[in-house]
Length: 169
Image (cartoon, rainbow, N blue to C red; front, side, top):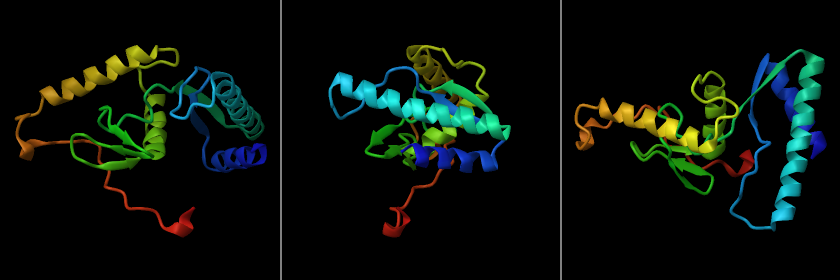
């Protein structure tokens, strides 16, 4: 796992002078319950390896690492700030029906979060959710006819994804 992580970080640094990464020092829960102690230890180990790789490789190669708040990055539809519906590894836009890969949406949102003046690194997750909801409500209130199905104007800009080829993974 260490080798794979360091190789991935080198590949990223080959293409980027600034790396935006989620700050994963806060606890999070998953769907699968392995026990509190096991989940905590696994999460800390993988976070530690990733943080070590980012710090070491970017420091040696002259890239900057900027940490951003991780709250809701994989649950927000990029471009709209609306919280979507997760189904497995897919994220569905409730406004236009577009489907995102959750990891791809998370990566786009991490990059967008880098320049977000309202959501700082240490903003509590409840406040982040409130900010996202306020933005969505403001955008929706500017729509000409909120009840008309022809007036839907989703800004997510993504297409419905096709199932991957078997050989892709």
